[in-house]
Structure formats: structure tokens, C-alpha cells
Figure 1 (cartoon, one colour):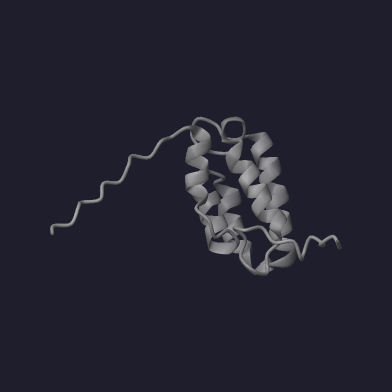
Figure 2 (cartoon, one colour):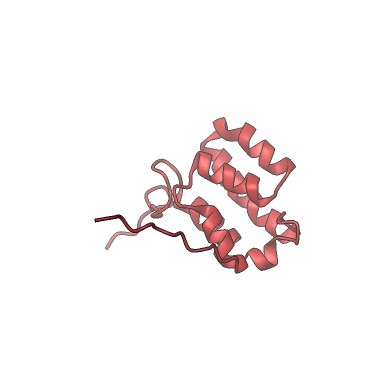
Amino acid sequence: MRRLSHKQRQHPCCRKGYRGELCELLEALLRNAATLFDKNDCLNSDGRRLFEIMVRLLLDEHPEHRRVVGRARKKPCIEEIVSLASLTFYECDALELYHKARGIISPYSYVRPQRQ
């Protein structure tokens, strides 16, 4: 079996034309939220290091996203990171992954039964 290069490897949540490594790095960032984010939901120094690797990979192939990346670099909090990912390369729900890692349980949604 032939190994796939980094450009051919596709992550299930990545959009076409983007490296699978971007999605893997984002998920690593969000899954380790307890150690990489502070109490204000902003990145600490270890989280920034991982975030910068992800951003460098993104800007190497897609420099047109530099304005969105600049906004996330100025304020590296969860809202900006999820916004960057969803606007550019990530198709799945990144905020849900973050909430699961933090242990925040969303309430069940109630579906009203239909009348017969």
C-alpha cells in the first residue's frame, strides 16, 4: 500500500484543498483545552506555540487568510480560534469539541411530540 503525502491525506473534518494536519492540530488544541487554555478561555504560552504551528501551515498554502489569522493572533481566545477554523478549513463543530474537553455539558434539546 502506498503512503499518502501530507497534501493527499485528508481528515474527515477538513475542507478540500487544506492539509489534514491543520485539522489534527486544531483538534489537539481543543481536546487539551484544560492545559492549553486559561480560565478566561484564552491560550496560554503552550497553546500559543501549538496555535502558531497551525497558523504557519495555513498561511504557507493560503496567504489570503492573513486578515482572519491576524485577528485571531491579536486575541487568541476560543471565539476567535473557532471563527478562524470554521471560516477557513474546519467543517465540523469545533466549539462542541472544546465544550466536551472542558466538561461543559449542553442541555438536552426538547422535541415537542406532534399531535395525531
